[in-house]
Length: 363
Ligand SMILES: [Zn+2]
Image 1 (cartoon, rainbow, N blue to C red):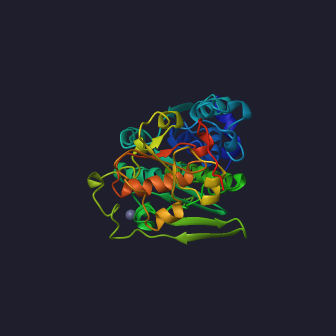
Image 2: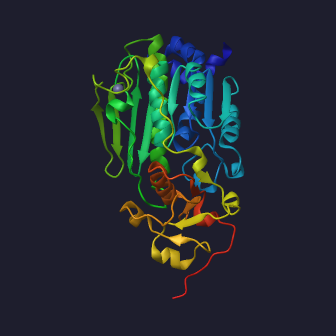
Image 3: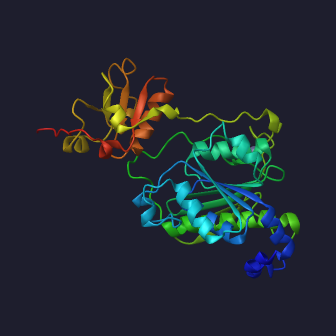
């Protein structure tokens, strides 16, 4: 136990002490996602001496991640995030177990992962994963440290199935309208880092509180919010709803949500270019279309799709929706797929990733 010396600075706190430190060393924590939130959560938890730290992610490191995902270096580009994260965390603390799962949290792996960990950290950036994690936390009785950042706003809370509300007490279902913009909703690195640091803090508080109850007050039933434009910060009380469609149920009866998007819906550009007879639907605005598009495609801007307009013969042939980089396309593909049209695909990476020629409109 000589290793304990490296944790002196936190053990000296009476709220942690040696008992709390031993508890941290026994704890198993799962972090969903090695993105901006995970980049802050993971090193702090590794540094704090969490006994087993598992990270699940299915992405690779991209240059555009480095602005906020401070766990990664330029040399990590194109490596699976999980692999790069595990290397970085092992270099930080060789005395703990660090496990990487290269994949996405889904209905098949969620039970094994949740039952195998004491605390779950939601570092995901999409509603499907957030709701799956929140529902699974209730079903399998594991506390979930929730975090989200949109623009200049950050939120962190703890969903403890034994003591507080769940995500669905706050939001009964995932929002159905997506921001129709190709550029991803912007975000500043330090704000994501703040939210992630706070999530790590909540994990430590939850675990240490098991050893020394009553000394710390994790954010159970309270939603911490920050508007970083003004730095106004609040802790809003959130209550368990007696009629909540999830946490009022017997946990065994909880039916985990299916992804709202058929995973087969995204299509890689090389795969899309092999499709015979597919309708390529360009959902960008007319000026974007005129500047260059896939030869043979049809143009129907997302704004008109949202108003209810549909291309002719939709459903009779595969449809590949595309925008500039794939984000607006995802909204459009989801909209059409949810209406029940078969064989709707979103072109991964959008026109920017298209390997074939483009055509400009002569005017
Ligand atoms: Zn609830």
